[in-house]
Length: 137
Image (cartoon, rainbow, N blue to C red; front, side, top):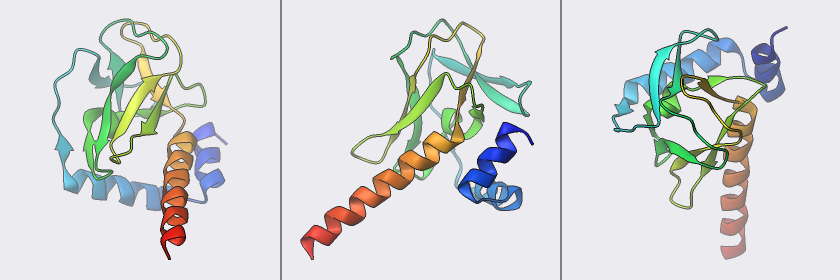
């Protein structure tokens, strides 16, 4: 079993459901942003991926992944999964998603995240909102 298949099992999601989520995101559209940090290219991991335009240092902001949790950028749509991540998405207070390098990334290296982290961050943010609403009741 590949790490990707293990990730799907860990989060209790089927490939069919994951494909439907991606299809739904594609229908919403991709927000076009200009950047000198990354580009979209052919991936050895899966289909299309995101690659560094230049050397990126650990801790550098790579770019926005989504705006208002709905509108994805190229970075949010085409970043592939790996258990050897070199970047991670974080949610901002306004629900935008920003990607930060967790390791140094070389020019033309594929930028990858562990999808588990992204889903766990999303769940943690949702739980925090629910808890804040419960305090108001």
